[in-house]
Image (cartoon, rainbow, N blue to C red):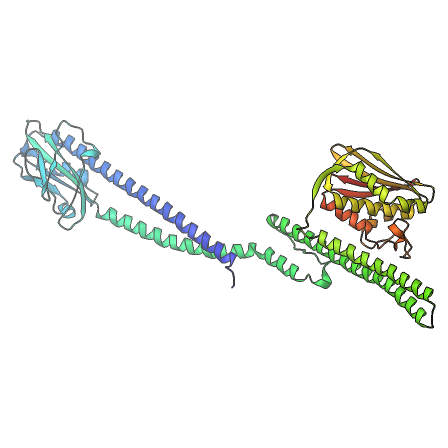
Length: 483
């Protein structure tokens, strides 16, 4: 099943986010504009009512209301939405202006209220201050929204008249409706543009990922040395490219090592097989005595033992590399175990004319069987290269919380170029790759398979430790560090 496109998903996510932002911002702007317009209209109504009351207060008597009508109505001139009505003390309409815009305006109902579409609107007393809280809202005969304020005015002769200032809000609502429609249209256009532009930008930003994929596709079994090389890699992808290249480096190294190990294993297995075949062919060339046949069988048995040990070592290395390899850790006296291993090799050491000495003191936490195998391999290797009448020293001591086990022997120094590679599988310092008998193997068993030191390094890696070799004119030292 094909997965979802990251580019499309992110573009849609950006579009949805933009839509949500536009809705919130648009709603806020709409409400803010609506409130501002309402506040300004209310202030216009209040100011007009205050001005009209001041002008009316200057009139001597109600008879002069109509004479000063133009002066009073001039307050609402120029605003087609504003209207005014002035009622005389008898409640009769004395002055009116622009009633068509507020058709259905209320008429006087009592001494303290004005009847507006079936309900009373309280008039502001002549001595009270007119504020926005005195404004009342209603609808006219056509359903248009109206807001207005009614106030009483005391003339100079003491008579009381009423003034009603109102405003038709239909034009305001139309303006808000147009503003809302524009917000919707431009919001939709903005969301579409954001989605399209986001898709194009994300697609361009994802181009390095496609380049990485194309570069990785060039890596094959025959081209493991190929590395991912992407120009102008974004900073966020540098770690990915570095990790992939490091992985390819490890794969290349492992594949080369496996190829070398396979070739070396085939070469080393071919040697004993060739020896057995050659010896058997020579024996079958003519009739042999029983002693000669017995010697042939003994020789073939030694070669079989060498093949068996080689296969066992290869299987051990394969199992040790498995993540679920089980170790049985325990605490033991390192010097005591070194003494036991030295005693095990005592017979071989005497035959080789070499002395084995154990020194130091340390307690160690490790897998005992793996520890014995590592030290046994190092001791066998030292016996193989130690001249007669020389000494091999097994030492254990603690340094800064680490336990160091040192196997040192006198003899020819190891060349510097071989010190690191001697722990590789099937690597031998001797370029002839001969199968010399090992004086360090019990019972004179066949020589080295080229895996002993590789097994030592693997055992130390299993314990989270390290192993390294040192060499000078006095001989060689192999140091195991357990942390």
